[in-house]
Length: 335
Image (cartoon, rainbow, N blue to C red; front, side):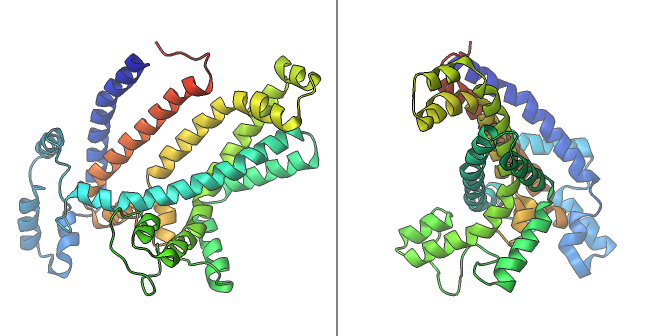
């Protein structure tokens, strides 16, 4: 197991090196100029040339890349062109918001998706299975930006029962940010009302973000459970007179979990990678909206380093999923 983990971590080196090059090239292909964005109305040719020189953008591209890589090797991910803030500080400040949103969306997807997958698998060929198939196809097909806008219009405007933007009501609740997790900070500040308000702010973006993972998890669970239902040990368990919940939990679901865990891990990595559309629609101050604003402002440093850190997190999440296989299925061993 240890050798497997070390080998996978070593494989990260060429992957991340190649990724840095791709991101660097793609950011330079974006139309526009950071100097022009930074100067705004003062963007005269002389001012643009001076700002480009101060930012190092007048140098050849290979020199800029080598300088960027030199900073990475020293643990320096650069500073924002626009705010002059350290990229790592901005990332650590915003990443908890993305974690809160991603965890909410994934909990919604798992808690609803796995039971629905089990139900449709055990009722395959019936109207329940057909309805579940239609629901999953709709969940996968509907665009997040459309679903988010519809949820916001319906539950925050037409029937204002849920907040439609932000992470908390700053008029009613204000407390110091200790962890940057709004729910945790509210509890640390002794604000139970703020904690509830933070949870309410998570509902709509969590539903919008969790719809696609829910549909995927539901379909994979159904397919995996259908395969397991045909196994001899399931029929033997029924023949022994075991209760249905025991058979479902101990013999069916446990053996059907491996592909489901794979999908959950992949979807979690994608969600942690920054839900740009969801965070933008709901004015959620997370990593996705941060990178979106950087793209609009042509802030190369944030785009390069932000995407790189998200890619690292995605790969590490998948490593955790691979390692978890050995715990879910004792027959699996890594050499």
